Length: 504
Image (cartoon, rainbow, N blue to C red):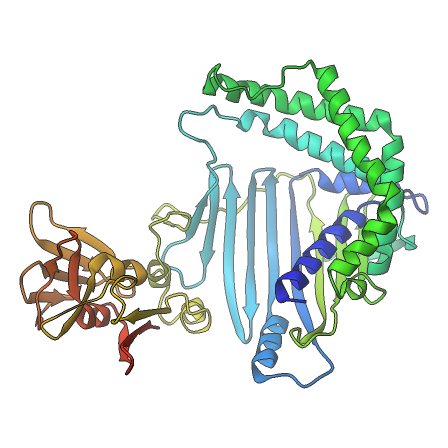
């Protein structure tokens, strides 16, 4: 079983458990469905949280690379010292990421316009725009709340029909939240991977019988989405048919038949489909076995707000020569206070500019240069993650594939070919033969002139052994060694005509 399939199994498992962990009925006087739905409401609050990982080594000899990877995973953690939810669209988080023996403090804030992230050592914060509007298209943000309400209603329908796990208990507990001692209701649940596959069939059978609930949800979705589709359809014009031609009643009836039919097929052939799934993915019986365990602890106040939580997920992995792990664990915990209070998010200061990481023009060098060289994150990005590392392989014997030209004992390559692969920016002086290349690692300017052996690197004059020239195909060619080394790379010549270009 290859690595891709194993991680696919892990993804399926986690997604399934996240659904199941909220799908419980009333226990010990606690209306769990209502409590879980209450947790979906976005309310102003303050909180703290942490998450860490544990990779459990396989019971066999491991390579040094596997041991290093496991050590790295086990050193990773995220600590949120203070998160503030001002409203559904305004949030701030202050905390730190831990990585081996390194600690990287961070400050994140989000508003309707975008997300800003300030990392310790960064000269400017990073920015991710949340603007999803398309020029010429209508603004659909006015429909977002209605769609969110439908999502919550869908969650309620799932909660209503999912069976309880075998291990579930409710009791009173006194817990400290942000230093305050509170009387809370403690919900504890445990679920194995084996139990997951047993729960989907009764869920589907129960949901299939709820015709009124399904039709109501489909109708609510229609009411939320239809106005948005009308707006989009009007923007496109009458030639584009984006809207259903039937009435709401016809659409609801049609979609209900599709959903009901899918549920009926699932329940009728469930055991056969389950066995087929396990056969197609060897090791699935381990992942969905008794050693895969999800443990959940929720603490609710009298208003059914979640005030404290702890999650422990252990995913058992099948034995394989390709998999150095026996299991993978995730631990998280958190607590919440000041629910519903007038709190204000601590915004990241972007008044002096920010680096838009979603811009296509942002290069690895720009990201790296945004950090102080003595900062922890600079060394992590450069030495550990190697974000600026590049390797090129050129075959001087194959002109059709690799754009290499030998001229006067010099090797030339197209300027654009080399600069694109080394993330450099190229600027032409309008109406002249002058070229400026900006080194992505340093930000230095390299100035060349077509037909001239005179050049400058970082303001210092140099003499080229051969001048850049324009080839018959219209491409500008430059001396390979000079340009590669000026951009921080090194050349290695192989005896069979291969040239290896590497940049750290």
